[in-house]
Image 1 (tube, rainbow, N blue to C red):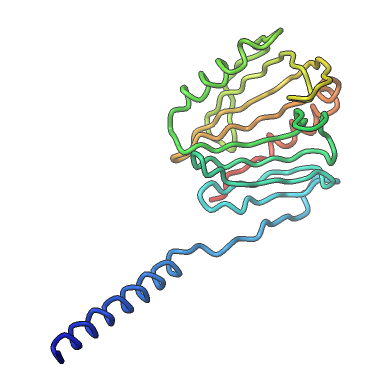
Image 2: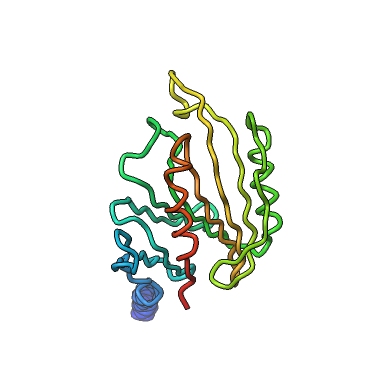
Length: 207
């Protein structure tokens, strides 16, 4: 009888010890949340945004009144980051004029470019305006400008057809393909041209 009690006590101690060790490991592996940081840019009316994501750190200038959104999509590990003018949305679930970045954990940049073109080529009025080689922060990149038409707001009962222009820059760094997208609806394309240019030129990978 005493032997059975000792065996039970030993099993209980092992179980408790295992639970404590497991909790310790979880705390050890947990990454404390990082604060998103902004600072004044050397251009009047702009701020510098520093990404809070450790795996894909970067910085970019943006107009100080614009809204910043950053999240990690759990579906495929992509980081998505957006900056847009406040309330600049074409209705519910509409197209957002502004800047969006997506970082995908892959080195297949040609595959990402192909997927991008194939996604849009069936849209009404689709055309590739330009396809050139460029650099982003000293890294070789490919810049593709397209235009097409789409009905907005998405999934709304009353829609209007809009002309949409997008300039997307693909750049490979380390184990990620970065996709910098500058998109605008209608007249926004002309109004945002200088802003997008400044944002593109200011984009830096944090080292």
